[in-house]
Length: 333
Image 1 (spheres, one colour):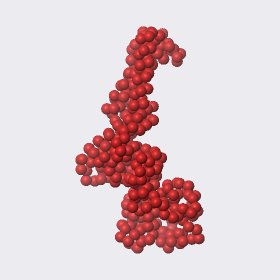
Image 2: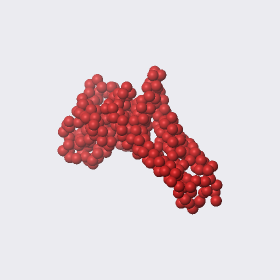
Image 3: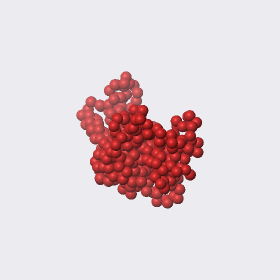
Image 4: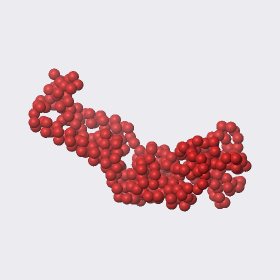
């Protein structure tokens, strides 16, 4: 193995130090930290692969010692070549004269990002740190602590939570950190607010999903009776209910208000319920003491994620209960 001390890993942007575990791409010779190569799953030096050239430390040194200085990204700290307009690592627009060290790029990982937020990925968990004083979900309440995939949140590693959530986990993980570290329980989930009938089923929380589906199907019946009985869609149905009576209007109003209030409650607490379900499922899988960590992570991913089959079945059951009940009460004129 050659001496790569002082060269730069193109995955994390850090320079190799003596004693680092270094592996190289068998095709182009680009060096990586072993954990970086395993994280990427392949060599990402696409330019060398496309040109058929091989990596050389002399070429890297020459590139970096040119007449123009590299530009350090103010968000993730990655050093970009001078001609770049956007950071190769996180996509942030680059500004000149930003090559000096920044407080949030310190090596001890105590003052902000030690990786950028784009290191999260749904298929493979996430690969970097989570600087909780910034990010798309506004998680500034965490102070300046950095979280990575090995950080424990309420007894569960953040990487396991990411595996469980699946695609685009950043929003969920920022909430999970707040729930586990600071005791918060409230956060708005727009999907759960708009579609509480099937959201829990979509996220594989079947007991909650069944309860929500039955409840909202029953609450929808007065509205269906009013809608179909008044002929709003061009079909008048004799349901045997006087929709203009005071008794029916009271029931109709109660159902409408109850539906709206429950939607708000579900929207506010759905993320917390999902967090508790994720924690329970992950702990159960980890308690099985599976020797192969990749097998355990695969099982966690399979247990979590989403299910469109559940959504389809849920909508079908919802329609059968609500429309079926109204049809049994009526006869088409």
